[in-house]
Image (cartoon, rainbow, N blue to C red; front, side, top):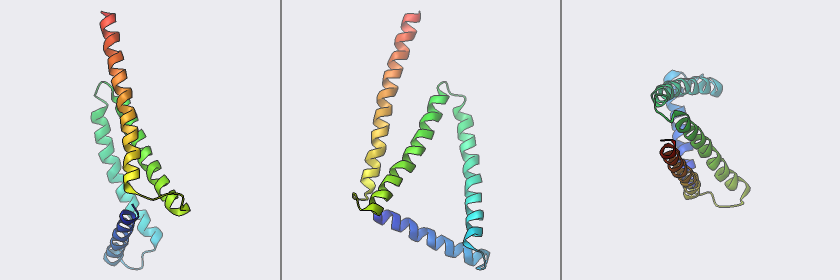
Length: 128
């Protein structure tokens, strides 16, 4: 996990240098953050907007959107916990721990979904 974060940090530093040399080395870190995250955010917004528009036409779209949002929150939370473990030295910071944490959510959600689908079909059968 530590190696993965260090690789990401090195990659970001390299990108920072390329951007600074391309658009002017007199740019401050705040200006770079403004432009990079602004562009990255708006591109992400358009992609998410199109995907969510498509999902909104599906029967259980709210459940799908809730899952995607929850999964996103869980990714942030899992990595925050791993970083906290490294910072406080109260555990090992490992990528496998983060993956297992996310698998836990997926398994629990799958059990919920199966129970929900079975309940839905039972309801439909008795409704007829």
